[in-house]
Image (cartoon, rainbow, N blue to C red; front, side):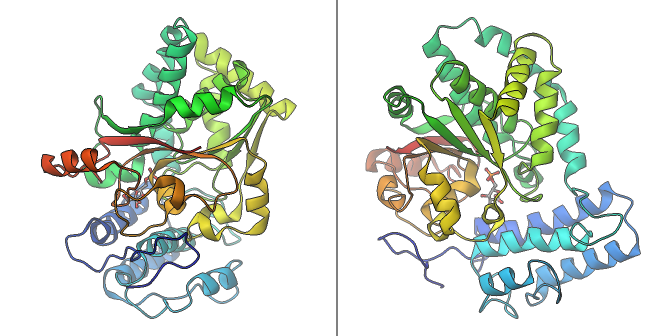
Length: 393
Ligand SMILES: O=P(O)(O)OC[C@H]1O[C@](O)(CO)[C@@H](O)[C@@H]1O
């Protein structure tokens, strides 16, 4: 098994999809082919795109990993990141790398990067759009009227939890689970008191939020951002999104615009929040970045200098979601009781992860919690029913 590169002290095997029946294997041999079909069905693609999708499907289910075509804009970056992987089976290379490269190749197959009519057409847009127009978003926006009447502590909790559990609703997850699970969920680590204390003790805080999914996750993220700005907990917020469509529903700048517009056009408190956020973008108190590393198949321990310098300016960085968590602590078979603070000690500032568990990686559990979870017999690591608010503060 490959060893982790620049990751912090504790070394552990990097996750691959080699083991039949493993979670990672299921993503590669079931979820990815199903996604190709969904994308194919969602657009009136021409023969060129259909052929490219056919050969991608063939490659991921039995072929060897091919490099990007010569002359592609990011060919050299992927040649570097994929050194030693091309020509091998998709299952035996790191899971994180294989998933990221799959999304890059899927976009390539539908002509997203090439000059032509399909350039810049987000293959996941129909799914994102449907979610944005759906009744769940409308209900969640309407519920903000009630949240507004809560005392500050209640609003803090409601809006932080809204952003946390919004992560459960991602569209990629629904490809294999049928539907994102609803319900109360289990918060197995809750460092939220530390988060609020840290912000309370930091005047003129600049909060960074590294976004995950658009729609039912990004909307509560935006609402939380407004709450931080409106209550003075933050004087500025920087929102990191993906430079191109990724992991199905990950938020891009187009999604920020669509989601913000959706909030601003809603009646009641939601509309007020949307207007304030719109103004915050205009005044620069809310800035958006789309760094290329956000779609890199690497852990944050390997982030480039300019991104490290950017995060170093944050009073607090909030990482959303499962994939960001994997990249933050390392996509490795780590002991669940390993320290979150140690695993994130390389990060140039205080971090908090808001994540529902949708893959095998987890650290920072106490032995008792872990033992109790293991006795349930549930797939608690991957079902999206459990969550953490975990801080390296
Ligand atoms: O949207 P999130 O929370 O990052 O979850 C995406 C997750 O979906 C998967 O792609 C498959 O479960 C995981 O590998 C990934 O961590």
